[in-house]
Each structure stands twice: as structure tokens, then as C-alpha cells.
Length: 509
Image 1 (cartoon, one colour):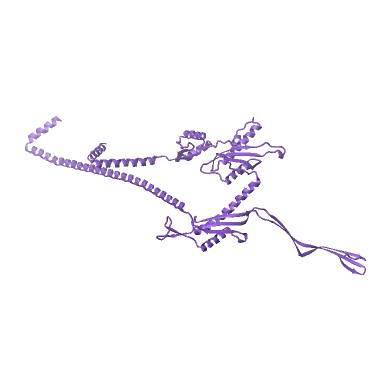
Image 2: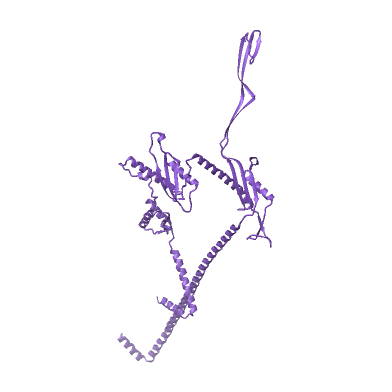
């Protein structure tokens, strides 16, 4: 303790002897070092929180927070109030404990409503509970979709009638709360529709209505009209055919002229007529005898259409029936047959390095139009990609036009600026960290040198002190023999006086 106080006193005296500028430098470096050490300590001891659950109902969030408090698990509430955060090391422990408590639940009553048996339940209450359970199970199934945040399902299940003509159809209404960063595609809406229709007895997909939280109708308006629905499907099929052919042609061209240097549009005339054709043909050259009848008659003459053979007074009649070869063909043409294609293609030109005095773009490149030979070769590529047929009346038009790339150039510049800013921010942050670490290193190095010098000085002091002690001891040892010699000399010279001294000492003892 005394040594430490001595060191502190020496540090104070040394600091007082510094010049003002040197004092300021020492204070700044000390503050920087303390700041770096404090920052590193806080970062090392900081608890990282991660989301336990998000998009929680306030009532459900209250139940979960109560359980977390009983588990002694710290938590935080997100700024929106719908999310809970817990330490990373406690994430899975909290989820398992909450799952054992049945949390989080969707707040929807499902088939668990029948877990408790009530003997006094009436048939009406039983039906109501069944409908509630079915609505809850359907809502929970729909909420499994990533784009759906919440769902409410309302079912109308009519009573069974004795006669089928009096039976009413079941209907359903579904309200969806969708995520703000996404929506439902037409395929997903159709999937929800079929999911509900397949889960309720006697329900058709046309009897289901789906709206979102803003009141927008998601199901087709005319889904109960088969004619309109068929036309809608035909338009959708036509669009799919056109998009497919455009992708085929674009993928081929972009490998030749480069990405975003060609635009392909296809218009397809699709035949949706379902034609059934029956063809019946006869071959007169291919006949076979089906039946033959022979009649013998005495004294009779055959008619004109009979073959007669007369021998004396007897005659014979032969009737032969022939079967003519017949072919019957039934041809059903498939729906969606492409009657004609119209393809339009626009291709950008070439860009080469411009010379001094020539008109160039922002990148120093000069535009050169493509030759007709290049366009013909590109046209052949497009024809092969879309299945071009001249006998079908297909039309292909390809032109070379210069694209307006000003917006793309601006976007590229902005991206480059953002990239530079990003790297500058990273460099500044690393520079600050490097300066702080350098300051800490300098402080630690100076402290190390100072304490090392103090330790060496202390060791030197102890070494010298040890040498002094050894010298004193040696001197005493040297002086001890001289005293004995003097006593011996005194005893030899005056033995009577020495005897008196010895007696006196013996008496005192």
C-alpha cells in the first residue's frame, strides 16, 4: 500500500512538472483511453436482444409479458407495441416455456371447444359451437400464409331440406388483414377460396367472398357467371402464352445484344373454339361379299335384276349382297390453338469508343446503328424462339432504334455515389477506431514504461540497500576480532585489573 501511494505521489509530482501543452496531451490521451476501455467494456457486457414474437395483439402481448415476468426473463417492448424482445440466450427457452402454456394463441376458438363435455347442451348450441370451431380452424389455417397478418371467417350453413330443390347453398365471407409490405396474388386468393370450399360441406367456390382490411374485393366480381369466368380464363391463358414467348425471345436476344438492349412484344391470336369433326368415307374399290342367296325355279323366268341360268324348263336365281369399306373418323381439336403470331422487336445499336470531336454519351461511347444483315440474323433467332410459321400468317417486325439510357446513367451515378459514401463511412469509422486504439496503445505503452522504470528503480534501491546491509555486517565482523584482541592485550598487561572486572561482572549477573 505504501509503495502504491509512493507511486501515485511520484506521478502527481511528475504531472505538476509538465508544461501546459504536455498536460493537455496527457489529459486528452487519458480521456481517450478511458473512453475506449469503457466502450469495449460496455460492448462486451451488452446484452443483445432479439425478437421473440412480432405483430402481437395487445391483449396477447399482455399475457406473454406476464408469463415472462413469472419466468424472470427480461424483455423489451418494440416501439410499435406489437413486438417483444428477449435476450438471445433466452430466446428458445422462453419460446418453449410459452409453448407449454399454449402461448401465443391466435385468440380463435377451434375444435378445442369440444374438449369439455356439457351434458345439458342443446342441439342449437351444438350447431353454433360447431360453426364457431370451423370458423376458428379456417381462420388459423389462413393465418399460416406469410402475407396474412389476421383473418376472420364467417360461415352461413343452412339447414338441410327434405327436397334438393329447396336446399340453399352454404356461403362464406372472409376478412383478411394483410402485411403492408406485400399482398395476395390471384393464385393465393384462389387457393384460399378452394381451401374454404373444400372444408365446408356443400359449399362452392363461387359462394365465397374475400376482402382485405381496406375493403377491397379480392375475389373476382363475376365468379358466379360461367361465361365471364371462361372469358377471363381465356384472356389469362392468352397473356400467359404471350409472356412465355416474349421470355423465350428476350433470353435469346439478351445473350447476343446484351441485357436491356432489346424489347420483344408478342401478340398471339389464340383459338378457343372447341371443334369436333366427324368424317365418314366409303371406298368402292374395296368390297367384300356379305351374303349370297340362290333360288331354283321350274318354268319361271328371272327378273331383270337377277342373274338367270336356264337349263331346259328349270331356272336358278342368285342374289349377292356386297359390303362397301367405310371409314369413320372423329377429330376433336384442342382448345388454345395458336392461329397467328405478331412479333415486334426493337434492338439498340452498338456503342464503341468515340474519338475526339465525335458525338459521344456520358461514358465516352459513340452510338452506331446495326446493319440490315445483323437485323436479319437477329430476326431469324427470334423466329426460332417463338416458333414462327409463315404458312400460318405470322408477322415479325424488327427495327434498330437508339434507346434512351439517360435515366439508367443517372441511376448508375447515384449508385456509385452511394457506394462511395458507404465506403467513406466505413473508412471514417475504422479511422476513428484506429485512432482510439492508437491512443490507448500509446497510453498503455507509456504506463508500461513508467511502471517498468519505477520497478527497476525500486529493485535498484533494494539492491543497494542490500549491499549497504552486507557492508555493515562485514564491518561489524571485522571490528569484532579487534575488540577481542584489545581485551586479550589488556588482560596480559594487567591481569589483576582484568580479574576485578570479571568478578564485578559475575556479581552483577
